[in-house]
Length: 144
Image (tube, rainbow, N blue to C red; front, top):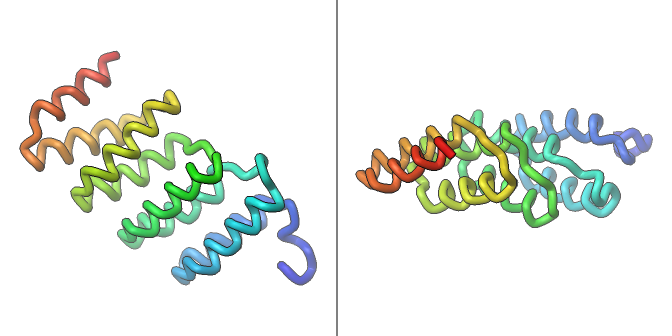
């Protein structure tokens, strides 16, 4: 696809490649392609590409690379969507990763996105860690 130019300015073609690369867990190639895309697509780069990679990571329980894709997404100015937050928060919940969950939850709220599964994940994390006041505060945020 590279040699015949089918990837050039074609987000759908890149998504297909990212699905394959994600199955192979070739994260270095994925990162290189993301950097290439950000240079050639600029502001046209959207969350679909990152969601494909985050989904591959979430299926394998790979929290570290999911976190990396999420952070890179924000670094490149790409706005996450509900699916993005649902996937990363689900991983952080399984991993009991309160700091990353707090960061993602804060980002979700700053974008004005409401993802019920993200709220649920945050409540579960706080409850498991016996931070009941914080869990109740999240419940309060849901009522806003």
